[in-house]
Amino acid sequence: MSQRVSRVNRRRFLGTAAKASAVFAAPMFIPGAVLGKDGGVAANERIALAGLGIGPRGTYVLGCFMEEPVVQFVAIADVRQDRREATKQKAEAKYGPGVKTYRDFREMLPREDIDAVLIATGDRWHTPASVQVARAGKDIYCEKPCSMTIAESQSLADTMRRYGRIYQAGTQRRSVANFIFAKQLCDTGKLGKLTAVHANTLHPGTAHDWLPAQPEPPKEEVDWDLWLGPTPWRPFNQQYVNGGWRGFFDFHGGGILEWGAHTVDLCNWAGTNDERMPTLYEPTPSGCIATYDDGLKLVMRDQDWMGLGTCSVRYEGEDGWVETGDTGRLEFSSGQLRGEQRQFQEEGTSAVSHVKNFLESVKTRRPAHSNAEVVARSHIICHAAYIAWQLGRPLKFDPVSVEFIDDDEANRMRSRPLREPWTI
Picture 1: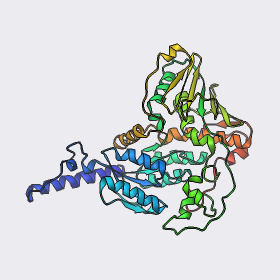
Picture 2 (picture 1 turned 60 degrees about the horizontal axis):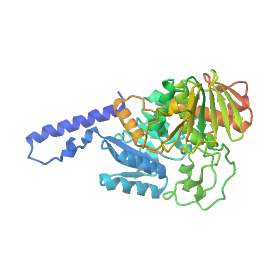
Picture 3 (picture 1 turned 180 degrees about the vertical axis):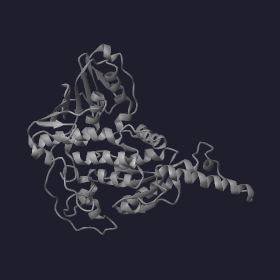
Picture 4 (picture 1 turned 90 degrees about the horizontal axis):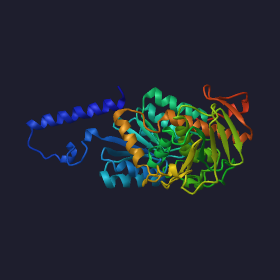
């Protein structure tokens, strides 16, 4: 029996006991919302949510969670004092006093009243934090990219499987209508046999230098050592903390991973139903072309898109193609396919449907749309493409052993050393 089921049963028992004792006590008023009336959700049925590393995107996603009546936000952990306080203020404006703050998330995890954790830290923390949260018996909604290496991708999937946790990556486009519709055109054969799937990615390059050292702030204000976490130590610079860590190799997986966490994921979903990975990776000046064993091409490119919004994808078959992006609009290769057009209002950046899917999975224990198994595969594809781009040569890959074939240098790049005590 999962820890969450045990907690829910305990809550139900306590709730039942309280109601029974009330029969013999003096009359008292119980608000209808507490009992689940008037559209409310009874307290013992709520999903208690905590947050970890809530910055700009995390604040938006947290807002989506807080719109759901089943959610009660109870705690925030962040290395930055300003973000701890801002999140506490936001949550208590809705739920009232009682949201607890933590600088070190490890102090929050033993709490038995927490069912799930929203992780919205920088990329370097996504896998190590998810692993620790899963081991503590909580379910996880984690922003993307979900891993920094091939090895982390494997560890993420293995851990969620071992501990039986619900995991939802913040690759929300799997729950957005226009992207779902484009995949359905592939599934129903409207495009014919697929020949190529195209993923909108960014330029892959990252830098290996350091920003100039600045005086380190007090630990309570910004815990710099905890901010660095599993990454190599370097001197403090406020730019990193303010979001300027992107583009630095130690903190960032490059432009293929940055958007490919969404778009390569969508392409592998549409092209293989998440069942396969390419076996050949050929770098291009600003991306990579990967080929599956049946000849299907996965083209990762940063230009020549049709202006349908960020994170666009294009699916090409023998009978036609469809392209779509974050605006919700679609373009087609022919008038016949254009007859399939639908109007979609929700944009690709919206997390509303994805959050609902996660909460439903927490209740039913059925896998979420972006569960750890499927995102591990798509992230491995991104990492393999980035390794090929860094080495500047084609690489053959064995999806079964998850190893490059006859290339020791590439295989060494499947993992990065993690700083103690954050090894997985």
